[in-house]
Image 1 (cartoon, rainbow, N blue to C red):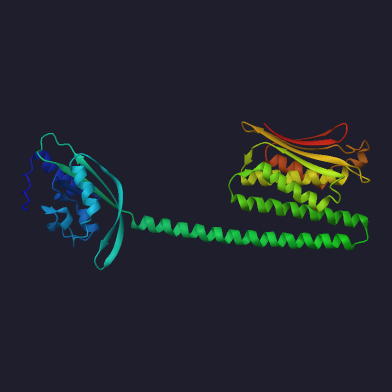
Image 2: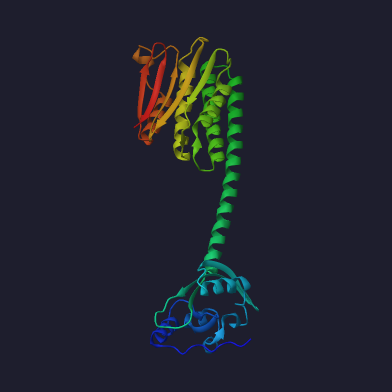
Length: 339
């Protein structure tokens, strides 16, 4: 089959060829039969092709024939016919005795009012280095994720060991006061372990608070309530979610308030209930921990804030929230509110 000779360039066409030839980006100007009318010097330089062999040559014959890719030629033919445009078509350019290159190609049919015949402008971007950088970044992220999971696993094991030592020590000591301190420390370690497990499962994403608080309170109850028939913990939470950082702070607040209630609200084997409540609405939220215990002592000497209250106040401030402690009849309610 014979190939028609290219039409002689008109003034507008000569200008178009000159623009393509001097472009800093790799460009090719093709006719309707996919004959190369012009190629930019940057195209020849990028793909190591002799500029003298580019013009008036079938696109598929460029170089050593590496551009003769059936799928690409079909797309260019469709573009020349006006039935399609090539937008960000990705391909691997396989070259003899040289590394393959990853390319992104775009092509469109040009509309010249005073030029006969079809003209297609093809632009080529070499993204080999970009794709390599993306792969390296993805590999680093995967390695970081694996390392993070390993660290989380070791932290979880360490917390379990610490909690076990504290509980064994609490059972051995004779002093009731020391035993109480060790038991409280054990509860705090167990709650932190629960926080760590939940955040690791969330993988730094949003945390569903109902499940989180439920698991946290189960952990506290298992480590600090000796008779579930006497004291219970109820969790009343809506469908709210929170970021990993916010949920960690909320978890620590719940831990301290529940521990405080277990420590002070039910002396002398008094029966009772603790309720953890959380609700949010359009960015505003409230978290409360209430009990039906003995309430806040009237004697100021026995109602001074302790370590737990200090932790809660610090966490509330960090969350830009207000901490309110009120006496109920019966019991006590601690509430953290964010407007």
